[in-house]
Length: 577
Image (cartoon, rainbow, N blue to C red; front, side, top):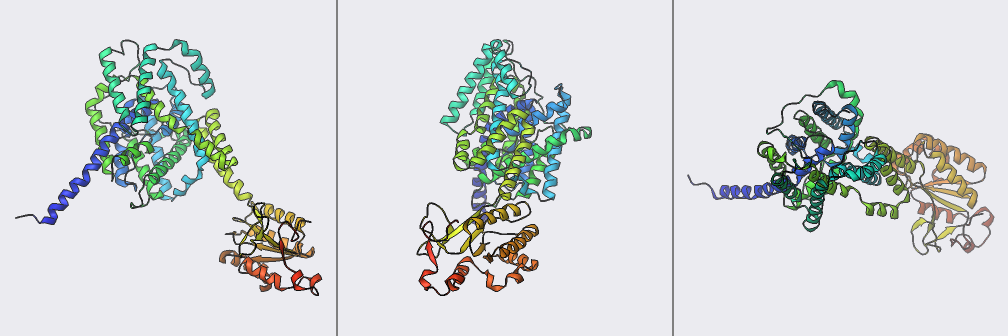
């Protein structure tokens, strides 16, 4: 029977639709797999662990994730966090101990992410502010680069903190292996040049291939150049976590889970097209949690979404998660076929790959941009950066979260209170400022506009600021424009009620304007609305101004109306006493 024409067209279209993903998956594999192996060495693990991480977790995320193109495997940030945690529980670096500890850490990370999904904690990713994350990543980048320098020079040091490690590297430089440095230096230059000329190219694969070829032809291992060594030529075997390590690894797993999710969400959102479904935070938690939990059973290290590898997928035309499945298949093929060749790879080449792709974490221009806009946030970025260098990576991520929360608390606890004027000749109310010296104010009327949520942490500060301004301007009527207050908590209501009583005793009448429905309900429930009455509460500040101008002041009832109302800010209107 002849096949219908539309069926034939559909078949052709599906083949055409699959081809871009296959190309994208193979291209991404050329970038991801060498980097995954390099990142495994950052964590102090065998390069095969990097291949495992670009295998099972990538497949699971491809099935469950909400991003069309996100590529999930190891990242530089996660690798250094894993290294710090493994060093605590396996200080002797025994291979068997590292395998079990890695499986436990990865499983814990997966469980935490999945639990966060069940509890709908996707918003937690926003607890690390952008400036703090900039500082944290810059510190991580510098730590990773320093960690790879000894491998590049062929020297060995005992790690004892960033600044001591810098001194140790300097002391051991005379012991450098010239041959190792030459191999690593050439690899470094080639990678930098290729990335500059052809961004997102398979540069790591080319350098790895060249390194293996030179190692084989020149017998570098016999010449004293450290190489990867034996890699099992097989797919990963089942590895069970050790429940006895859970409590030791839990603090680090929390930080790793948070960073995994933060990087995954950031990369997923960065490469999502408007026509694609939105990235769903809680579903991403579940997807990355399942990816890590399943990866743990097959020897993978903690994984998350990678920005650079996702950029490759998008740049070469990847459209769906089929590209990730192709990359995972390439990882499996590498384990089964290329493992013996990978054993010849010099560690200096891997160090060069790590250095090149970790430098991108250090963004001086981003620091400058933050400083240009907000000095306070620049301080947070700098503190996060120094926190990583001084206290270590795991402590650094805790410091980054604490800094973000302190910054949030500081901003919430110190909301602005603006003195409001009116643009001359127009019905526009805005804060008084030197930029608008001709804005109008009104004799005897002070309009104040607080901003944000009023609650127990800032109620007294706002009350003090209002009292300072009333003492400064000495108005007859104080109108609080609450149009920028989206919520008011019970403690703040008490401060407002008490403030109104004190102002009344001092001869200052309090008016309220611009209350949203929720705030109005709270003010009514407190009894303040009944006390003020409809004559002292207005839908907006403009109506309040009109009402004020309609009623003569006590000492002006017999004066001409033209002498009563509007004057210029900074001239002869309402002035500080």
